[in-house]
Image (cartoon, rainbow, N blue to C red; front, side, top):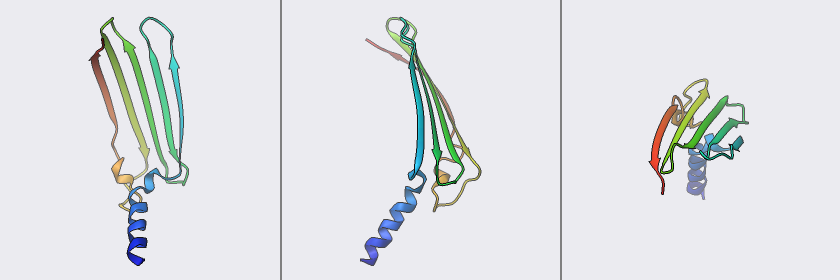
Length: 104
């Protein structure tokens, strides 16, 4: 039984960063011919670990067959943390992405 308890605590430490989080999000459709959409998301840790993740996304059809998507994510963390908290997985893991896709 001690092995199972040790394994469970190992799993809890590995996913600790995703426990007790609060996500607020808004999605807005502009209802136009370009099919514009905006997504805004905010994820905050309610345990007091000072971890906040923001995500912004914009989609739009540029023509009848092409669609553009822009995404921006920024993580607000005070420090890298250690393996027990799991914050090193998202520390300075910010990105900006632009994609162009063909639709039918």
